[in-house]
Amino acid sequence: MIQKCKNIVEFIQELYQTKELIPLHEPRFLGNEKKYLNEVIDSTFISSVGKFVNQFENMVAEFVGSKYAVATSNGTSALHVALKLAGVDENSEVITQPLTFVATANAISYCGAKPIFVDVDIDTMGLSATKLKEFLEEFSTKDENGFCINKTTKKIIKACVPMHTFGHPCKIDEIVEICDEYNIIVVEDAAESLGSYYKGHHCGTFGKLGVFSFNGNKIITCGGGGMIVTDDEVLAKRAKHITTTAKVPHPYEYIHDEIAYNYRLTNLAAAVGVAQMQNLEIYIKKQRELAARYQSFFQNDDVEFVVEPKNSTSNYWLNAIVFQNKDERDIFLKYTNDNNVMTRPIWRLMSRLEIYKDAQCGDLSNSLWLEERVVNISSSIIIK
Ligand SMILES: *Cc1c(COP(=O)(O)O)cnc(C)c1O
Image: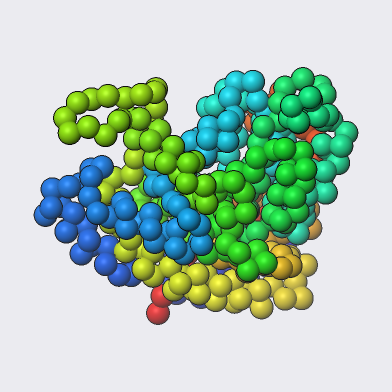
């Protein structure tokens, strides 16, 4: 096992041409980032007014093929607002996967709602359509208004948040179909999947609303930022309104027509976002090239490299490998991190965190299996 770890470390050091610390995912700045930042500073419009926010929104909407995009301060705030727009409140419950970054479950909690954890598929690592259907058949019923009611808690299951893990699309068309049947609104956590497609359509555009993140570790970044996408004009307008303190337009008066949020993206951040968007195709190409090199390295190995699921084109944002068992995984984590190659286990399941230990769960056997075996390996793109 140690020899195997050593071979992998040497391969990664060869890829990045260094024996210094290799981070998990570093940002790269290839284009107009500094130029646009200087422009913004010279203009003095560094904050919430300025052309780059609109430009960033238009570029993302066009790229993913949604009618509208609304920029926010980060992916978590985008999720929070998207869930509010889906009508999620303290009387609601929201289905999501336990295998995700904590922001997905936290955004549900910010609305006062309770998450319900339903298993993922092994091949996509995203919410399982089969397990979702099984859960709803067993635990839900329809009320006289057509709402999906949780038989155990009597609360409305209002929304469902599937997540495209590491940029690999889940079976989102089947999930949307099931949710439509049960009158559940789909909000896609597409934070990791900018540049990923399922059956030819961009991730984040299948649900009523989709959410992206531009945090420093994502495929492209603006330091911190998020985006809500939707084809619904009313929702898009409301998204803009409640992420900008619900201020009613007026030449000089401060009138706010509801208690809302200061979740706006700064023009400074948007300037970086626009510069990164201009090169998004390059980032995707380079992520996929890197993944292809890992894939051939791990061919014929009993460590399995995670490849894009059927019917999809993945951005391969974060590369992942699957060990035979937890012991091998633990040896690898220790060896790599002791040897300047940063690796991380997949997230601890939400259902196993103290903060969500009381949440209702379906059968989580796939999530538990993956939790013990999956490790993320160096995924910064290589520019030569
Ligand atoms: C990154 C991420 C988020 C949150 O994005 P931030 O911009 O960091 O707030 C939400 N969900 C998932 C799955 C993520 O990976």
